[in-house]
Length: 333
Image (tube, helix red, strand yellow):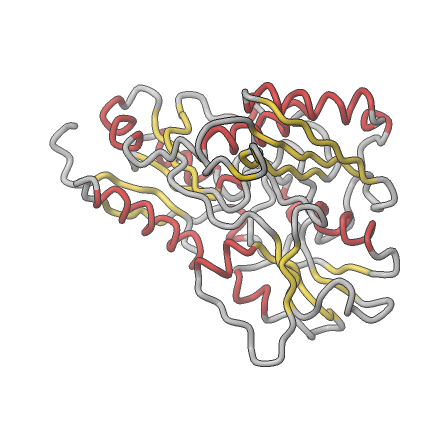
């Protein structure tokens, strides 16, 4: 490494983003690398009164952070992997995803109720089309309202304005140590019920492709048990295409072998993928098991598009407050 006093990490300024950046800093410190943080405000952070779909969705929580690295103001950027567009057409030239240091629980959580306990006709607050269509497919009587802001803001909407419950990422509440108030019901939604967003729960660290010193340092905290799973999910998303606006979800895990899990290390990968129509009436799912994550992601996407009828679903412009999720970033918790 050069004589830099510290590795400069660019990050958003939300409580969750700062927690994630400090976690990466701690991992780097354990390998002897000092760090400093550069807080960057993104378009998604500034314009909380505008739905993510109206903002365009694609990279609204990462563009400015990536730009800080590209122009040399920072050495690396810490992201939620789910915020990063998967299409190569949307990648920032000269940057590379150098490390996936760790992944928390990828599942979603319904806060305020369980799915079964929601009274008939209840309203659920969510800013994600992916979450909306899967819940609508389970409960056609539900209605939905938009949701923006940091985790605390989102959770404060439980029981407000007619919303019986909100949906957030379990990784967010776990990382920030949120404990539900006494008597508040929550339900962790298994991927069999709701497939997460691509990369949900995973940290991703990006740096300049030609910065060999930084790449070498980030490689020390790259978790080789996580990388193939996230790459499988991102390949699924990329194969669907950066211009599609249909809700999607995906989750990869190490496949069970001989009746048990193979310890999150090596072996075969099981990938579930979902592609849906905007109203939740058509939700297509498929899973495959294979040894190469990126090939697996592409194969699941091709099946949904070519064999399951996904290419006939057409584009869908989500209503205000609901973000589209294909090849795009929806951000938030």
